[in-house]
Image (cartoon, rainbow, N blue to C red):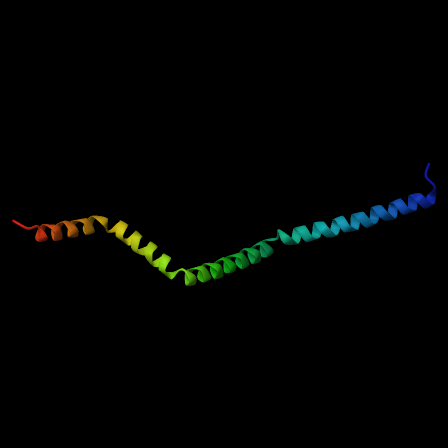
Length: 94
């Protein structure tokens, strides 16, 4: 069998490891608590908004062109009718 000194050292190591594990477990519980999750989600949302603002500020022409294309897509029928009426007015020989 083991001598008492070795057994005592092994128990001390076990107790230290258990204390580290319990500390890590407490930290994990804190990280998944609803208040911490909410805080982290809010921080990520603010960071995403700031990034979107920065990108939008740098690419105003691209955003404007995209919005114009979307508007033209949604209004394509009235625009096509307008172009057709304009073409009818411009046709020579009638």
